[in-house]
Each structure stands twice: as structure tokens, then as C-alpha cells.
Length: 384
Image (cartoon, rainbow, N blue to C red; front, side, top):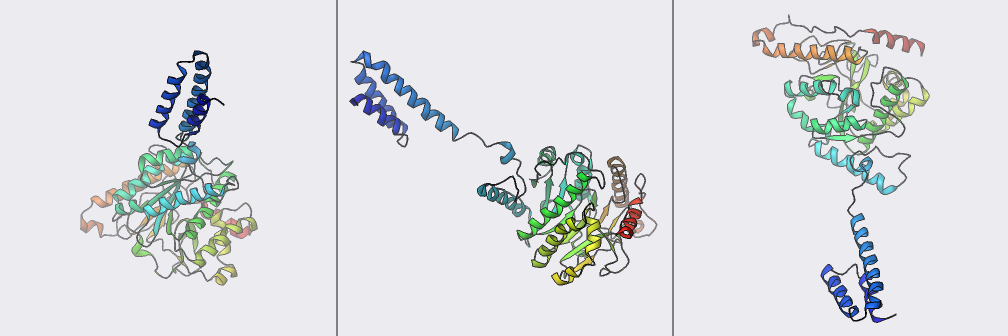
């Protein structure tokens, strides 16, 4: 190999050297080659190839990752994610979101969102508005994490709120309204239970709230300090310890410990024992299971006086914390009654203190929603 070729090869291999030294070397080679015109074309071709390879390699280092991984992460573990480093990356991403939103005791508020509920003037807007106008609830928005179930919901979340996480399921499309008890609805409900188990395993306590629950007052003073798992009710019988209460999985406060983690694993596994039932029906069954006692889980059922809904509304505006648009089928019916609910609350806030303390004020909902889900619960329990 001639001295010129060795110089060219050394220049091409010297990608670790600084660009100034590389430029000087090319200048020297070209200067020497000027005296030998026949070899200049060959040398220039080699130099051009080296420069192109160097440039392409350098450019590839800075190409952005696919949006499917960089801006729209999925839950872990997933059968589609065989790369261990990718799973760790997703876990770190969720850890970052939760840590940024967590209270000092590692408690976060979680809700899920799909495209149907994320549309402008839909459920998510009413949900966030309730936090802004509630009594002591605005500050809680700092601890709310919205779990988006599809790309559109994630994009809308980013325009509305600080803490968003994208949770996708391979081969499942959650973007449309999931009608009650359809296969799509069941997949979405069970995906939620599995995700909440993940949050507990990461050491975070949480309040899970459906987005069709209006937050009118800070609920923390109404929680039981000694409970591992406390859940709102469609129908409350008077005692927080009565397992005959009818729980609603749309609102619960859970502490992260070995008992709650084991309970969520048992709850999720029970979907195979009772196929075709959603998480709330299964909860109504397994709450009697001896395994709950073996786990040692401390359960409390929340009074509808504080955590009400359309199934059983809170009667006193002075103590109500949340109101759920349960016992309601269809998005349009739900939106109608949620808007009325917010108007009722705003009207209550406008009253003078003396009238607020009176017992004459009541909700004007349900209007378009129905109470048929109570019959559904009774028929489900009887069939089982």
C-alpha cells in the first residue's frame, strides 16, 4: 500500500480523533496527490466514501426513537416486550410519573381515560372542573395521574394536565366508548386491575377514581386509618365492616403493603374463575372468600353519605366528598347528568351560609340516568 493510501485509510479509521486533525490529514493527502494527477481521482473517491460513511454514522446516532416507544409507553411486563432493557425503561418511565405526582407518603390519585371520554367538553373536562371548584380539592390536582388507554387520550391529556402516562395493550383498542359488559369493557376493567397491582408493587399508595366521579370535597379526612383497602359503594347498609355492602370499584383507597398486593393478585386471577364477569362483580363474590381472611386484608366500605352516586346519592351537601355517575348507561346520559351535578354544586356554593346549613337542598339528578344496574347486581348475585 502506498503512503497516500495508508494516509487515507488512517484518516478513515480515525473517527475518534477530533475533526480539526482529520481535516489537516485530508489536506496533506490532497496536497501530495496534486503532483500525481492520475492517482488523484482514486484518492478522492476513497476520501468521499469515508466522509459519507462517517457522516451517515454520525447522523444515525441522533435520529429520534419511534414515537410508539418514546412518547407512548406501554405497561410492563408485556409479552410483546422481550427486551429486558425496554421493560426497565418503561418501568422507569412510570416511576418518574408517579414520583413527580406523589404526596410525601407516596400516595397518588389515579384515573383512566380513553378517547371517547377525552374529547373536548366530555367527561375529562367535567372531572377536572370538579377539582377546581371543590372544597379543598384544587391542590389535589398536583397528585393526579391520568392513565391514557390510547394515543388520542394521551395527546389530549398532555394539553390538559401535568401528569400523564400512556398505558397500551397489544391488539386491544380502547379508544371508543366501551359499553357495559361488552368484551371490550371487560378487557378494559381487568387491565385496570392489573395495572393497579403494578402500582402497589412499586410501593405507591393510591386513590383510584373513575373520571365520571365529581370531586366536591377533600376525601382524606373521611378515610379509615387502619384499612388496607377501602371502597365506595353502590349501596351502603350502615356499617363500614359489613361485607354485605355493595362495593363499587370505581373509587377506592389502597395502601401498598404485602396484604394489598396479594389481594390484587387474587382479584385479578379470579377473572379466570368467573369468566364473563367484570371486576366489580368478581369483587362482590370474592369478598366472602376465605382467602381474604388468610391474606389478612383489612377492608372498609365507604359511606354513601360522603361518597355517593346516582345509585344512592349523598343527601347532605355540607359533607359530600364525591358523587359518581354510576347506575348510568350511555355516554350522552352520563354527560347530561354530570353537567347537572356540577350545576347543583355551583348553586349550593352560591347560597348564603344559613341556607347551606339547611336540609332543604337536594340533587336534581338522576335525570337521563337510570337505576337499572341495581337490578343487574341482584340478578348476577342470584345466578351465581
